[in-house]
Length: 469
Image (tube, rainbow, N blue to C red; front, side):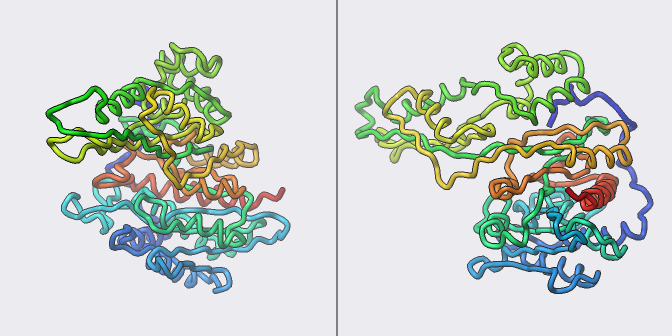
């Protein structure tokens, strides 16, 4: 998220959290679909994505989709991790389809920790509460609802519209549905481009809309193992070469190190546009960096915000440690996990070598933890992608600018992008500065934001589906 100082710009009237618009009849139907998804537990421990996918297939059948256009999938080894591909065929067979992607699985949520039952949809004070209300059942519900609305209207798009609801995006999964579709069922999801999660409209602390983000690229998520192995011995006879001290010294050097600033098309556009919106010293620093990425003073100013710092460079941070084997023995082994988010285009081995140099001791080995995520380059921000978004923005959110972002967090976009399907994150929904507590306690989304995002994405999909190139 942007820092609080950057967000106090107030470009429109604040969104009300006290009450949403009076529900339209079609919104009532959507709310019921959304409720069904939220109240179907899809956590990896005891939930079932397969059950959620089956419920969505039932709704699509009721809307008139034939079995030939519905493709449930699962593998025998992971029967609860299934998903669904649905297709609304296009009238122009020469035009490649567009793909609507969302994941059904959610982060674990314990009832005893939450104020409300995480798997019961609650509407209070202008918010929907529940696990997955934003991440990512908001988008899954909108995509299913979009296909239903198009069918009920008798709409015949020029481009085919495909939807993939998958399982396995969240941590702890044993089966990755998006990867499976790419590797085993590519023909089902082949598309000119895809729309995905994890970009959103940004609200400031007062509820003013600031910008609408579109994700155009992700960093590579890669772990490295740092390890020191020593002979050990009795703790009554300490030696200088202590595995814990050696590893700690290396980690201290890592903590003090910053990878160099890098910019690409996505981040240049982001900082150029945000410099005008934010203004002041922060805006000036953003503009200076776009002009000269080597401007260390500007980089220091922008890097004060952890999210912006992550967009500027590769980052590596120690996340786990393990050392020693007894209270009265010198440690024979000390190890740490370092998680890196690698800037697009930077090779994983390059980062490993940098870490090895930082350790500055041959006793500290640095190895790549496998498997490695694919390295993908950001998709192009072409007029065919941006103009429809800007057109719909003028209709639903006049005066708000669209800003491309590079995400440090990962999504299923990496598998599609690696396979040659350019993938963009765009929710059309505005969320609070605390990221609506996704992955945390009492996850929520503003009711009006969800309804507005539903209409925004529906209009955008219709525009994209009318394109023929």
